[in-house]
Length: 97
Image 1: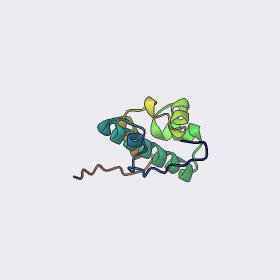
Image 2 (image 1 turned 90 degrees about the vertical axis):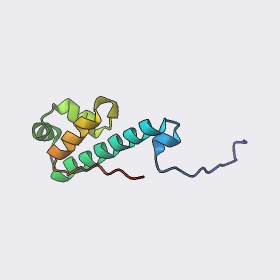
Image 3 (image 1 turned 135 degrees about the vertical axis):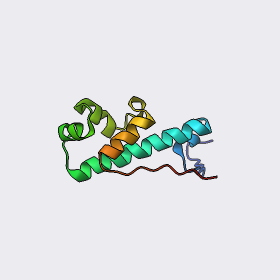
Image 4 (image 1 turned 45 degrees about the horizontal axis):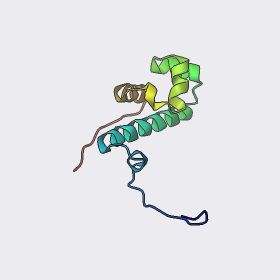
């Protein structure tokens, strides 16, 4: 391709799959990212400082910082679901074919 050539490739709907991750791993990564984003949005909507969020979530302020920065590798899916619930969200799992 030349520098001025442009290719557009349609997304699969999962950026992690598009990046080449194995399908099952890509789904878990997508779920973790979505839960982190929604939880961070919830914390912001509540107007909590990171210190206040830490108290409500039962974790340290540095862990809240890693959560809102999207450091997914620092959190298991179980822990993210727990934190989302503590933040007032109601996560649910739905499986489809």
